[in-house]
Image (spheres, rainbow, N blue to C red):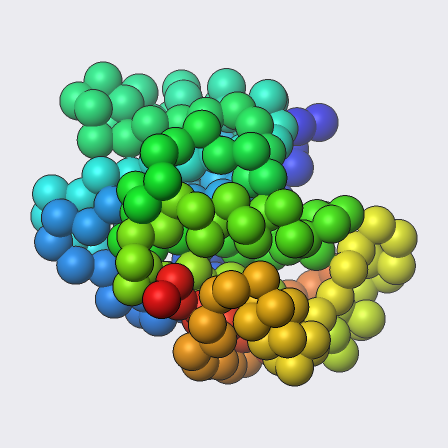
Length: 199
C-alpha cells in the first residue's frame, strides 16, 4: 500500500515539483532540505537545477524512506544526498545548515505547526528561505479525502503564523495546476508557493 501511495503522489506532485524549483531559484553550492520527500522520485530533478548541491531530506514514513534510499542509492553513496527518517519538529541537523528548505503538500498534516517552524528557523542559515507549497483552501475543499485530518491555510493565516514565529513572510506565488480526474470527476486546483525568510 505504501508503494502504491508513493506512485500516486509522484503523479499528482510532478507539476508541483517543477513549480517549486522554479520558485526556489537554486544556486550552485546551495544546501537544500526537503521535508516529506515520499519515495524520493524527484531528487535527480532537484540535482539538475545547479551544480555542487548538498541535499538532505526527512520523511515521517519509514516505508517511504526505505523506498527513497533504494531509488537514490547512487546519490547517497557519493555523499551528495542524506535521507533521514523522522519528524520536522525534531530535525537532526546543526543550526544554520541550509540555504533553502521546501515542502510540498506537507503542512496540512502538522497537528501543531509551531514546533516545526521553530526547527525550520533553527536549521536555516541567516537569509535562508523556506518554501511552502500548498493548495488553496478552496482547492482543498473540493477533495473529499481532505475532510478529515487536514488543516488548510489561507495566505493571511500562514503569513500570521510564520511572522508570529520569527520567520519573515516574503512572497506568495500562485499557479494553476493541470486538470486531474478523481473518481470520474474533473478537479482543477490552484496551488501557492509561500516564501518565508530567516532574518
